[in-house]
Length: 575
Length: 65
Image (tube, rainbow over all chains, first blue to last red; front, side, top):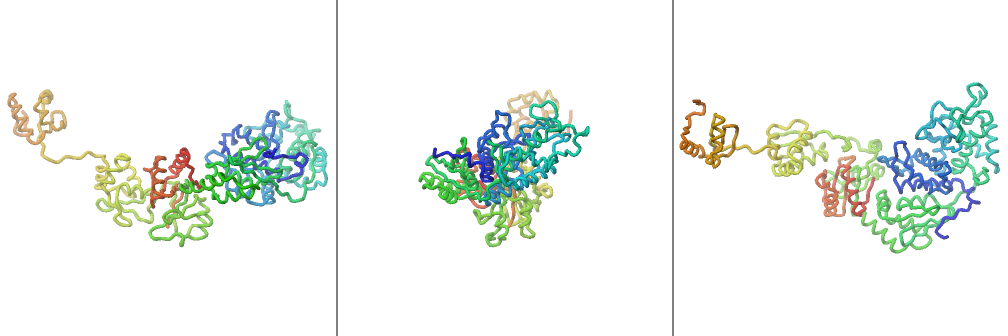
């Protein structure tokens, strides 16, 4: 079938790193497509493992109890090599992965070999399905009381294995390879110098699969170290191109010295599917394709679906529509379907209409400053800053250390991931002082909510703006925000004005009022029921204290006189 | 020049598009600054809200992280 990547088992064993890298590519593509959540044990969930396993050239069979050894191996290695990062508990490919695939095949091979040789988290014993490690805890850590090799021993053993693989001159059986190693490097993983002493009768904490007790050291080198060496041959040594491994005959041999050259092509279909065809796909080109599409592999068919969301995400990483079309044209022997070409251009144009930097370094041009002329070229190039509207510059937020290296002298950075210092000070009257050099966006926004600028550093409280802000956020919240942004407390006059305009205080009244005082509570109750009082009453200030509209005192005096109540002449007088 | 680190930046082709983007994300009131009509500066979480809101509506902005 045309749309299937046919793999010839006879040639499969000689492919070395080029073949192994496709497995790494499959894992990374699965991560890119699924962005799996990292669970508490530090690994993605089972669904991810199944999907990643399916993306391998020779998937592990889960039902055989092997688990997903290959996925675990590549995932650990990719994580340690920095090709994968955790972002908000989600696993995703890093920028280093793009750089990795942009390098040449020999460079990539060397990079991955170094990653394996120096790996700190990979433990080949824990990956070997034939062995059972009772001391094994969750997350593939091991109990310190077992005979399992420590990190330094493992790293030294990897170097020995790599050397032994490089010295192979002809194809030999794995059994022979293991025997040779046993003769020359008996202490490869575990020290056997004192075997036979009462301390070293058993491989402590190491059992064969299903075993009920630790394996005896005597006669079991082949079973313990041998199986680990077998795993190393099948995985790191073969996949990283140290040796050729034939899984059917279980033989190892030297890899071909001839340079590995990729040979494949893609077919772009009108339904936006891209199929990779060929025996030796170029992982570098496929990774570029995977980064602007949705990898969706089925069995061993490498399928990439061009869709807008992933494509625009790639645009955000610096790809352009022209780059994407050029890539497709370069890899495809037949012309790109017209509708695909049109859509890619359209997606490119549409996404340019809205650009978002969710975590950015924004370089503000102040006044008539022309940043394009004054910004150091080193800063622009190193940070990848580009001009945005208004002559300002923007880029994704760099690491603080990187920014410090390229920052011009005597330039401060306002870091919005932290609480910024208060920069507003009270001035005379209702004026606020805010030095322009120190003014950050949060303080500026607050000032714009409550005041109007009168000069570069001075702002005047504005009643209209404060009324609006008070309505929007509430008087108490607004005052709280202002107080937090002040270097020194607001003056009494400013606090009064701000509170009043923001609606925190009721309006006080100053005008003509008549007062009716009734000391006796019962009398006060009876008076309060009079209809005449209701006509004139403005407010009941306290029990027996009635505030009346102007002229109300005379009217009440008259009304009460009809009931035999006469008024005393002085407020202090008591009967 | 002034360096503002860890802010969200939204730039659009025109001011109306920006108004709409901010409105559908419900962050119009939280804008830190609009130095020019088609450029808005936001807190980072508000910028993420803009991305989410746009993507939920089938619009895919160019996101640079």
